[in-house]
Amino acid sequence: MDLKVYMGAMLSSSFKSHISQILGCKVLKVEAVLGGDISKAFGVYTQTQRFFCKVNDSPCALHMFNMEKAGLEHIERTKTIGVPKILACGQHEGISYLLMEFIASKSADSKDFETLGHQLAAMHSLAMGDSFGWQQDNYIGSLTQSNKNHPDWSLFYVQERLLPQLITAREKRLLGPDEIPTENSLVKGCQQFFTHTKPALLHGDLWSGNYCIDTHGLPYLIDPAVYYGHHEVDIAMTKLFGGFGTSFYDAYSEHFPGIDGAKERTDIYQLYYLLVHLNLFGTSYYSAVKHLLKKYFD
Image 1 (cartoon, one colour):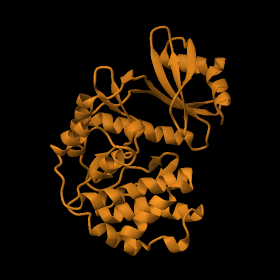
Image 2 (spheres, rainbow, N blue to C red):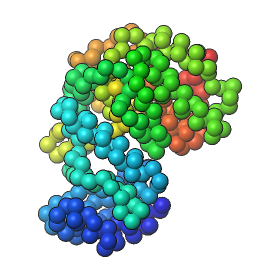
Image 3 (cartoon, rainbow, N blue to C red):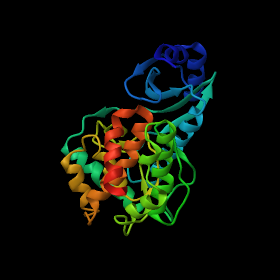
Image 4 (tube, helix red, strand yellow):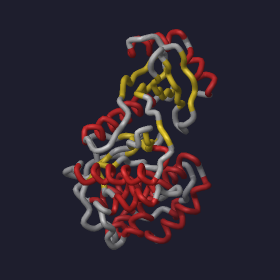
């Protein structure tokens, strides 16, 4: 659905009335805001407050928003790092929506990145699971993310992360059948570097667009794809598209000093996200995917 249609839905008296009932006060204005490849985002204004609303009309949108809600609430329960408060998740006249508090944000400085590093490390170290996976499948972008529980990290990472994306890439003819390693070679490649891993709660999609710093300098995580996995997965994702500030990595490493194989694990963890981008956005990610497949699993 294009922006004009979304705006029509959001500005309709029926939709505004629906949101007003949820908030318990009249919605005066709705306006489009930047952000979102998958859904459209809007600011919702009452006389005294501003809220944030994501909308989408795809068949899976309501489930996708419910999984986002569940992930944010799961992170919130750790009491380690901030997330926006969810006010409502529902559907009105065919439009699914996720309504949450608006976080007034600022650009991160070195102190903010330091705080983010400490708080992310707290989440990874305190929120531990009994196995790798999560209570239900969710989404990475608009793609489904399988979270079946496994006691073994290598098997989880191959069967629930790499293989589903490789199969999708083959089905979309973005990779040829002869370019996809066997499951056995994927497992052996991972086992070389995946040692002494414990299940930690992950954000799951931690690039620079999925956190914000409020005006008081407090970090908030948004748009999660949560599950229990190796803590280095989140760090690998932060480095894929430019990286966070140096003070973030310095603060994080106070809690999780680096161990042998970190560079190789970073490559393999980034492979998942590159496959996701290949399947979502096309062939511009092919070369990077092909390079890592050949390097570790040929």
